[in-house]
Length: 148
Image 1 (cartoon, rainbow, N blue to C red):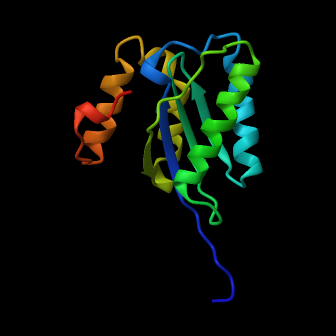
Image 2 (image 1 turned 90 degrees about the horizontal axis):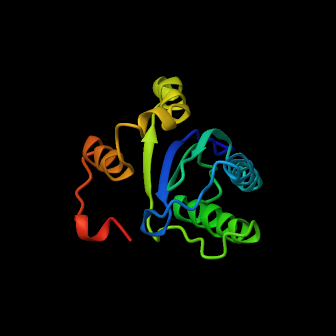
Image 3 (image 1 turned 90 degrees about the vertical axis):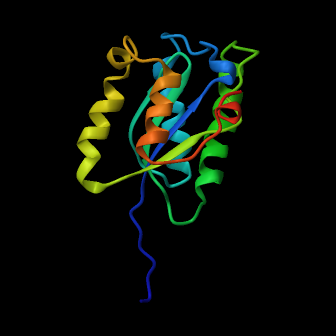
């Protein structure tokens, strides 16, 4: 085959350091737009994004020219610098992240899930939500190393 083709959907989740509520509502839309721009520059199309006060969900495509870890690192590094430029000087993302595969048939379900984050988190904490994903994807984890 003379051409390399791929279509890999990712659901990326990461929180602020110690789950501090660093992301105020007034900055949220601009932060989301900035993260979409960074992703776009890396050739990653973002289908949906939502920045909660203490964590972010990004549903995007993995470009075939970059690794998952490089994609997440570049999004987190540049957006951390951007947040500090917005006057949140002590802003930090957690060191780790979660990335989960998404199937073509579940795109609309995942988009609605991400769009519904404010309602969802009235009843479920970020920690419980993240544990749910780890269990759903059958990922073994040690609670001592999930949070920072």
